[in-house]
Image (tube, rainbow, N blue to C red; front, side, top):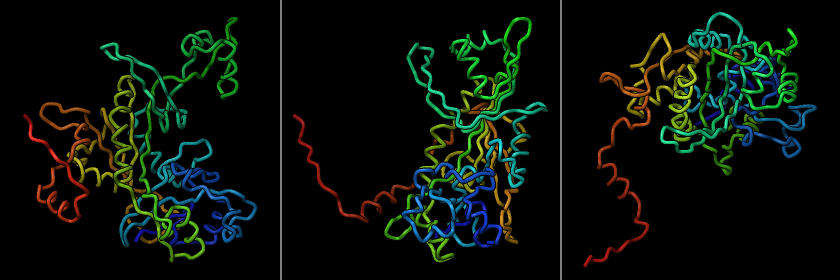
Amino acid sequence: MSTIFELYGYRRDAWTSEAQVNLSKAICPFMGSICDGGGNRQMSAIKLSEHPALQRFFPGLTNIQAGVCSLSIYDNAQPWIVCPRRLLSLRSNSESTHQSFVRAKLAAHSELPHGEYRAWSEAKMKVATANDADEEKFFDYTFDYVIAGSTRMRIEEAQALTGFSLRDCKGKAEDNGFTLASRGGSLWIDDFPGDPVVIVEIMTSSTSGGNKEHRTQIAMAFEDAILKGHQHKGPGINYRQVWARMVSQLIVKSQVALAWEAKTIWLIQDVLADYISSSTALNLRSYLSEHASEVNILAFGYGDLNPPKPITPLKQASFYSGPITKTKGEGGFVDIVKIGAAPPKAHLWKTLFNKPPAGKISVERQP
């Protein structure tokens, strides 16, 4: 039976007075600020006025996000992370020691030169493009994070590059914290975004949505975990949905990084990596690597969960990289969209035999 493993970053099986104080403020220890629901904002939003039993646990607050970080699907098994903030947050106020291992591994495999880099979150691009056949296409994607360097640029160059007016360029530089300087009668932006670039995509698991009658919806499970402790039920993991989201973007975002002479690194959990290897034609273990390639996946795990700590840092990492398509007879990451093996046809007959037919169709004899 699924249960909530971590609430607002703290393990339920190692709950402390510190965890209780943190819960009362609805703080995400990985972001260093109030929990924003991660990738589950709509499903996890709670108006405390509609949940009077919860109000005493959150004094002074009116609205919260159900701070569910991870779920334990089976006893004595690795939990599944369901919030991307649990895996990594690169926001300016989130220099959490709890994620120092993840940050260090990301920095190492990004292969960036020594220095300081800025990270932009949820960078959305919707651009009309054309392929080699002059067919109009649209690139419509949002990057979880873009890590980039800096370059000094005259404001006239920034205007030509961005298409903004000179006035707008100056205003956006001021509003967004860039450094403006006058030199030789010209206005410069000293830290305009520049190479090198690394795209970071974080893929954590989706929940199954749950069942209202059984109180396994995420907000209900959250409420019951607080009020009843271990006597609650959590939602399941929607393997198909998380897999579909990742497959639809993995190759595209890797290809666009290559076109920009950059790289994309996908951060996932080790249990998802195992699921990929068992359900597709791609065995990730064959792509263990030390250096980045066209497609790059960095998988993290909790490791040994004992002895239980209030906040358990991720402490295991594996880096997988390889080409998008097959090269020299070897596989490529395009195999990730192929099934591992077709099931025997007997399973089809068993499935059909196990339920009544829904209807009939007649086919007339052709003249």
